[in-house]
Image (cartoon, rainbow, N blue to C red; front, side, top):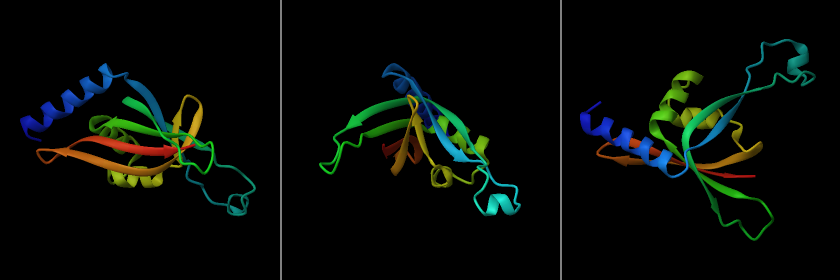
Amino acid sequence: MAIAGTAVLRATDALLRALGGAQIAIVFPIPTTGGSSAELGLSDPGVQTLPLAPAVVRTLPSPNSGPRRRLEFLLSASAVTNAVDAAGADSAAALFDLALGVEYQADLFHIESVNTEYFAGTAYLYRVIAVE
């Protein structure tokens, strides 16, 4: 990675820490090992969580259709890259596709959309919109 790309990632990490530096977790299903009880849904394989930090959490206006909370999670690209490696995913998009949701303050939020911000050809920020 170019020096400019590394500098952008370090600056993003510092900015997100300065703006609150919250920690969230992405929730994934644990792969089933097979067997008839798992196939029939009689046993719950459980979930695993993968912490991500630094993150900034912002409240978004909720639609008029109910009391659901909408949050925007701003995630550092370096934290997402570490999570991709830890989860064994092929890419950040695959990581978010595999996820059941985002856990924040003991609440689980469904991922509605994920957008990537780029500077000088380097992904530096992920913007995740999630609803309760």
